[in-house]
Image 1 (cartoon, one colour):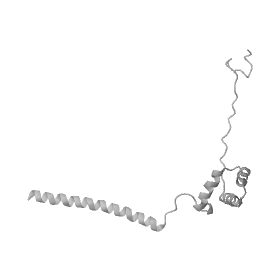
Image 2 (cartoon, one colour):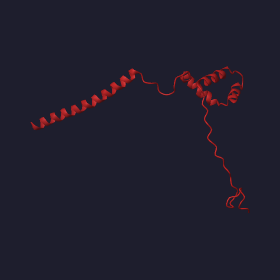
Image 3 (cartoon, helix red, strand yellow):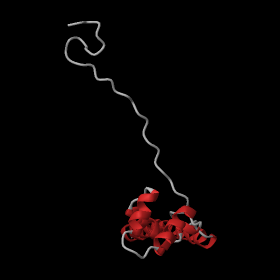
Length: 125
């Protein structure tokens, strides 16, 4: 066995050269592209036309399903996904609710102090 042969390593078999490949970048689609594909899919009437469209564009049927849901929610019309920003009224309501909770806790504490004072007066006579 030739120890200088690059295909063998320590006599234990061939050396397998591995190439580290960078992860492929996930495709992202603009809202305009999604709308155009949905419109084109809606115009497909014959058997196999949607399949041909998907193959041509390199898409999956699940893409259409997801994009239809996004369109129904208005996300393809420029709306961002996620929670809507709180309105000024909603912010004010939240603030008032927090203040109400704080005041309820203070009231409970004051009522406990008053009850203790009543009981101590009754006890002392």
